[in-house]
Structures are given as C-alpha cells and as structure tokens.
Length: 433
Ligand code: LLP
Image 1: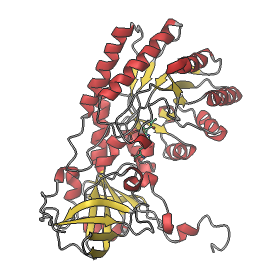
Image 2: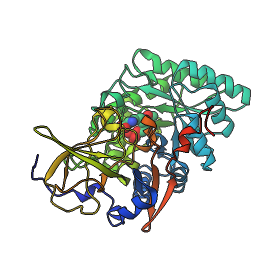
Image 3: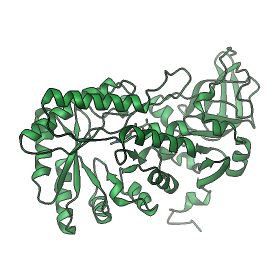
Image 4: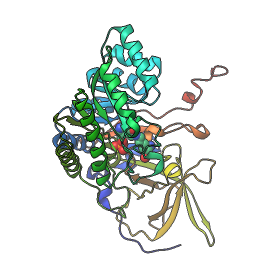
C-alpha cells in the first residue's frame, strides 16, 4: 500500500540523538537498544523542580530505573519513588540518599517494609489496613517512627486507558474517600504511636491529558484534609502522584507543559482550601515518571524481513518486539518510526512494524510511514520509548534483553549492558555449566 505522508516529525526526537551516528551506536551496542539523551532527562527533571520547588519532585522509578538513572535523579535534586524491594535495592546500591526515597506498593511484604525502614527511607505510602498493621509492627521492632502518607482514591476518572487509571473507587490502590474509609485510615495513622502522619497521597492514573481530572481529585483530597483538620489531624503534605501525558506521535496534540500542570494543581489547591476553609497549607508534592523519561529515548532495531501480503499490506519484522516494548500489545499504544540514515526522506510506504515473537499481536508500530525502499539490514528507530519499555521488558521466547545507552556531549555509553545468551541460563539450577 502506498500512501503519501507528511515528513517525519523531528520534534519527537531529542536533537542530540538525531545528530548522533546511530548506525555506530547500533554497531557498538547491538540491536535492539534503548538510546537516551541524558540532557533531555535532566532538562525535564529541572523543569519539574523549577515548577514545584526543591524537594517536591519524586521521580517514579517504575518508568525506568537503573544505577545511572538513580544517580542522575539524585544529581538533579529529585526524590525517588520505589514500588518494590527490587527498585529499593537498585536505588540504595546506586547510593541514592534513603531519606529522599518514597516507598510505594499495594502489597509491600514484611521484607520490603523492613528493608525500607532499616535503610531509613523518607516516606512510606500506606495502601491498606493490613499494611498499616505491618508498618506498626516492624517500626516498633526497629524502634523507628516512619513518616507515612495515606494513599486515597478520590473517585475521579482520569480519561486514560482503564489499565492505567487508578483514582476510581474500584481501584485496587489505596483507601476510598467515600464512606469515610480514607478518613478512618488517616486518623488511625495519626493516632499511631509508631507512625508519623505526613499527609495524603493520590495518583489518579497515567498518560493524562485532561488536567481538569487533577483539579477534581484535588477538591476531594483537600476536603478530606479539612475533615481531618476538624478532627485535630494536620495534613502537612499533599502528594498528587504522577501521570502527566506525553506526545507519542505527530498526530497527538501538544502535551500540557509542566508549568501548566503545576499551575492547575496550585490553583486547584488554593480554590479548594478557600472552599473548604482548610487552614493548613500543605506542601504540594508530585511523582512524575513517564513525562521525565519517555521523550528522552528512542529504540533502535534492525529490520530482518519485509513481507508483502497481497490485498493486506506490508509487514516489516525487526529484531525486538513486545519483549522490549509491550505497550502496544498491552494498551494499544501508538508509536512512530523513522530511518535514522534518512529521517527526512519521503515516506511513501505505510506498513506494520512487527517483532520477532511468536504472537500475532506482537506489533510495535501500526501504520508506520517509511521510505518505500526500506528492507532487510536497515536500521529503524521508534521515538518516545523511554518510559515503561526497558522497565517492563521481558525475556519472552528467551530473547536477551536490550542494552540501555545514555548519550551526553555526543558520546554514547552503556548504562545497562545487553543480556548475553548465557545470562538466560544464569538462574537455571541444572545444566547451566
Ligand atoms: N506515582 C504512582 C503511585 C504511580 O503508580 C505511578 C505510575 C506514577 C507515580 C508515575 O506515573 P507516570 O508519571 O509515569 O504516568 N505501564 C503503564 C503505566 C503504569 C503507571 C503505573 N504507575 C504504561 O506503560 O503506560
């Protein structure tokens, strides 16, 4: 199928990556490979810190984390959200200051809680009564009084994919505000001899474009803070989670800026304080993940085969797929593709870029526009793949996971090496020698 198409939109890629010899990067580190522009990550951290203030921005490590990323986040003055003992382990081994770590998770194990408390993490976000029991027991055992944020679900729609919408009442996360459930949980933490009530937390979802959704969540959470205040409990911090959307394709509208997002949150808090009479002026915290890393990276693949199916279309198969980017198969996520050797060449071919996995749904890009000459041996890049790609990567079909490369001052260095075939045997108890 041949359809004329607009030129590739260069604004989807950090300029520093377009200027780089990506063929050389692919040759050095193999494909697939995630390539991050370090300055873009840093600039995005700085935009958040400028908009929300020092110590108010907690990078959500689930979007992408490794030692180098943890160090970068620390250097940029952000805190770090870890959702598991694994993320905590990497953060601590990277030397991330424990007092700047926030521990999340809707089912933290005894071991995870113990490791976090022993390390002295700055805040723990409580998600259930069973967990508050666990926190109290382990805090007493260790003789510490950790700062606790109580996660609440305000019952608002975030207008995003249902799998990544977390603020509705049916959500598995947190305590519902309705029915007094969240009020009871916060009161319990405030009254606990072993826990220190720091405030309320709410994360309504991810890839959010409708900023009004945040404003509605703020109304509910501030009203709860006021109810608590009237009962003698002061909410010092309001953590409004992450979720700001990013522009994945040229067809998407421009994304809301961090400054716009900050203004909406601040205005909503001010309006809700005025409306409810909340006397406390809680510190506003946020936890961005995707909007810091997604646009900073592209993924490079090598084309292996091109197949024309008469009356159907063209498949281009690359050497990765749902193992390095499961977002299309999980959420129907859309991406673009371009050829780094000729990003501005006319794109007269519409095709489907598929991976090498044994699943028909293993699609990376639907309706990719590429030069009609594309074929085996060509290098293809998918931009805006810095979030929830490497972090959700799998070894499906025993494919070794890709390397992660950071680029700075025109120099590319691996921060996570590519897995070897022997790595695939590393956990086998028998026959690995
Ligand atoms: N805070 C909490 C408590 C979260 O659960 C999340 C994301 C964030 C912050 C960061 O949200 P972000 O700024 O990245 O939207 N795998 C899905 C996204 C799952 C998001 C999970 N929680 C995806 O690929 O779209």
